[in-house]
Image (tube, rainbow, N blue to C red; front, side, top):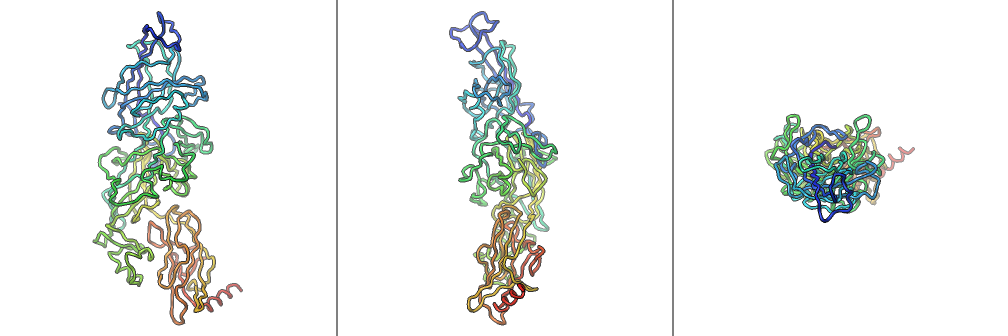
Length: 607
């Protein structure tokens, strides 16, 4: 997505002089009295009329949703690499001629204010008077580039979009109209304008002082940008022809929208988009989500301070800068946590009925201590060392986390991932506004979508997105080997060590990438054999329930099985299929019987 951002005016002073040494590559000008011409250029950089951002729920395409001005060092030009090249097919950077060379010049002494800069005058060799040239620029690299072919210029990659912590690398956003080099004077220069865009993207955030979840309070304190791609950025933007033709590259092309206007019709390409790393993925990212050592006191957490943008009367503050990061839809569909850029919000959750900062959560309810939970479960062996066994979560200092994966092109459909939906594109401001929270967060960050309001603005900037932390569960449980009566699913364990267990297949389709765990309310008498947890969207898991003790006549042993996800300890409504099992919508009731009773029921069901 791009709008003209910074306009650079190039004033070329073509001074005709007689010199002892001449460049014999330059043809004689008809107005020369003798010899040939040397060409001198001076460049004026003008930023005062530049629209810099756009904004609301981010729409696909190039135009975005408004514009935002740059702040601080974002508009400054410290140095400039300028490239001239001539093509015969008039296709500019997309020429098919592999032999095109470039003529370059570097400026590092610019004077002026925050909106207008002027270079020193320099001689440039290699331009033919009377010929037309395309002009491309790269600003703020802090060094001169020794590039002599157009192909090398097209492939040039910038390792970081921000040099020396405050020099924002910028590059031409379009090839522009070719400029004809004419014999002019210092007082009558040739004027060239070039639109440029920053290679970095900016993430701004807004959150309220507090949020209510029922009568409970949530206070977001800090946030961190995660999965910041560090594998480099092409100096000049490139896009694919379509979402299916990924081999035809359009250099300095635009982001397209389908005929319906609701989906991206092509991809922006960064160096890894078409060839994603499959091993050592963390090496290509800062703050890599899946392996990051999370700590509430980490220095990388950031609070909000200086206001950097506004939209719809909401003020936003800078969170961080990052690099272009685009993944094909099919590669981000399973889990955004692997490749996509996101935000983790750190918050403090305060239950209304609890005055202590530490508390426990079980079955969707918060407790000040374990004593209340022990009474509910009727098990006095519970301690901080075995909480997970009972589906209990401890919130230390009330700290919890919410995660949001940044969207570039919202498709309005939470069940599928569309092209460019989860992406970071250069020169965009992503405005993230947390408008509400409807549940407690997790004790460690998880790949769980937070739904909130986000705006992407052309700095270019994108649209507002509403973040809402909800579960959206969809799944199914089926019986693989189940014997049941009207009251319970049955299991058996005889004195002769003969076991009759219950076997289920459980699949959680959504939320994708979220962990789930199966629990037993009576772990003293029953246990899972094998797996009892999995991840949403990763297929079925076999759940086998086995009695721990042999059958005793007159002793009743029973348990309930329920399932929770990592983002919510409340039992899922998983027992609601047409062949539902004894219990209710979020539990399956299981009872131990003798092997004789079990086998009789099994034989009767088969007859």
